Amino acid sequence: MIEAPHYTSAGAKRDANFALPADYFDGTVNEPVLHQAVKVYLNNQRQGTAATLTRSFVSGGNQKPWKQKGTGRARQGSTRAPHWRGGGIVFGPHPRDYRTDIPRKVKQLARKSALNARAREGALHVVERFAFRAPRTAQLVSLLGSLGLGGRKVLVLTAGSNLDVFLSGRNLPAVEVLPYAEASAYDVLWSDATVVEEGALTGVMPEPLPEEAEEPAGAKPTRKRSTAKPAKKSAKKAAARSAAKATKKKKATARKAAAKKPATKKSAPKKKSAPKKKKGSK
Image 1: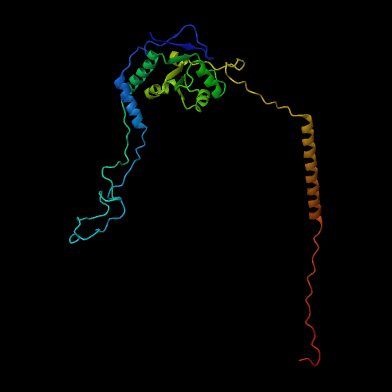
Image 2 (image 1 turned 120 degrees about the vertical axis):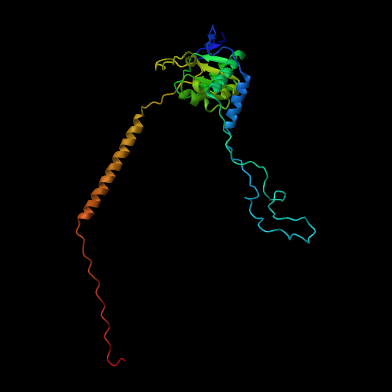
């Protein structure tokens, strides 16, 4: 039976180690299967968008550079031949799909071998539960530091999806947080140590944290903002609001009074009569 060090949610080590499930942690490590699983995983990460232009896709070269005979030079049919500068590329990469697949049982065996390898090395740590009430990176860093994993690549496996733990470790480049059921063989081999929640191994999901429970060590207390406002400021704001309302009412009444007044008709301007011509004027 393989055992792993057991820790509390605050990072304190328990006296007795945690006995790993014997049906899964039986010590088998199949290296060829691990190599195959890692190779398939890395192949599936490739985009396959590398491309080069052959002589049929390079622009130009429609005309013969010089005549066939009489120049003393070697005959040439196109300036876009592969041996010309700026010509096409021979046997270059083209867009393709690098995706490969392996049987499901081979994937399961590779994952089992990776976890067994970490357990045999003593790099598998079991935590009672992750007591996170909110996403806090400092709390996760302090927990890993108490486990002696500071500065190492760590894979944190939770019992089910835990958003608070995921957001706490998202900002740490050397920490990866995944549900226990979604971790692959590559994820386990990528890390130097693996931290597993106890509920993921026993199959018993941890109960939600009570509201009145104390926070674990290393967590910064949250500061509650007081909703009470000073009396002076509230009185000043109320006076300003009442003054603004009064000015609005005055403007509204003035507009209504102006609208009720009858509109005076403007008299049309009289047309100027043409000046009379004086007698004797032409």
